[in-house]
Image (cartoon, rainbow, N blue to C red; front, side, top):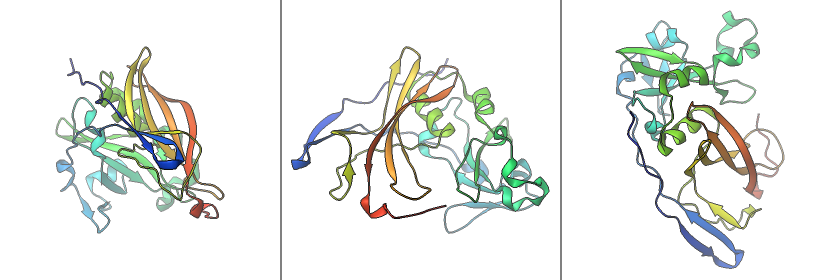
Length: 242
């Protein structure tokens, strides 16, 4: 039986000047992920803290062009295996044929834009490196989900979302809400509800930051159930990214 973790501490509520926006802060969970087995696995560290995997290395042969240390917030997973982010660039693999036609079962999500950067994970299990290509393979290793911290880790690992803590109102931003609340997790009847964020990085026009409600079931199923526009930076209104 996995150890139970208790929820976040009581939030603090602040009134922010004449903007009349309430800010609710929650503490960031203190978690840790072990990356040490990957340091000497044939991937060379560059100046951007990314490990580029040499052709013919074990990690490359698993299906990773690059490795990155996973966020410490994935440290809520149980079992507490060493885990790394695996990045696969299909345009660098002409053997695939059509690099834009890779089945969705081969990756979690595209972390890039028109130049695809598919996200996977590698874990160190039973003294071997094991590639996890999709949420089903991830669930097979790490479910059931039994705590708030584990639910947070599941949501962050399987969806293109992020957390935010110690938020403050930024004077130049355009806000669409009266309350700005940090990330937190709550236990609900269906499992856990993770309050996280998303940002539409690519495309033209307004680049919003959204508040998301993400449900994580005990079985490890993760789904978005609510989305709210929070704010945008007007300095990015004419910015196009692809």
